Image 1 (cartoon, one colour):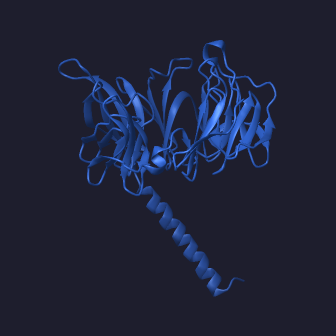
Image 2: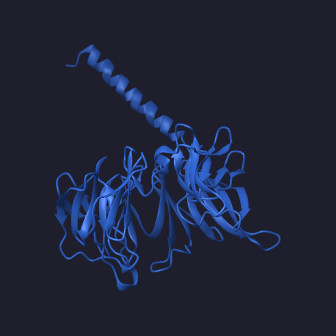
Length: 366
């Protein structure tokens, strides 16, 4: 028989779980899409549109901000939503979804967002202007950083932001905050087709703060430390490179994978092992079958359970929600039919078909 204290504890846990589930149901989300259109003078536009969801059901469509495509674009690469309010484009342009205003037009490319100062940091490389600049989201001031620190490091920055690495030919270079640049050696070969070979540079990722994972030839992965010392990690037989060579990448789960033409591999650097890379994390408990199947596209799973199969790309997730751009099997997803949205609250897919989809931007919590 349980003691009174144990019974009280169990009751407390049940009440806590009930309160948590009830609170979770109160968190509704809206999906932000960018959609093409034309203005009164027939100039192409791009509009940020908000699709409101409640209990898994789409309840409202709301146009937020429209700009001419020549002025501001969302179709040039990855966009992100910061602080549940701001859309930041790949170039570093900033749109405030609350005030529905374009706050900042970038002259460069986005490096990242400084969480401490709440600033969008861009690298500008123009004939009349160059350097590292920051747009502060609180003060709305734009300034050149006299001491950019890690934001000024070229190439791929280490996890602790104290170093960076860049590739040139078959050589890898190490950069320090002091401005020094040293070679980690050459012979880091990356083979592709004849069309791409002349422009290929080494592929690598940071394994930790002081070591890179790279390759000496397709399939032969090595670890290189900041002194240039090399150590074999794994050898993958019959490496089948894409036209422009295999790539070492990190996914949203912070896993390292080695992308090849028809199959990819999950790499465990510490254990020096590799295995087929089958599922790519999409965040919030969702994952996508990595390799596209010609007969259906990709399997999509939530908490290890299959929820659908779509010819799709560009997944964006929120707690209990996923959105993907979709089309007919075999179609060009550069011109998708629309967006499929699944919700864990009703276990159903909703179809959104804009006249012309530009990009899936992401989710807002309401």
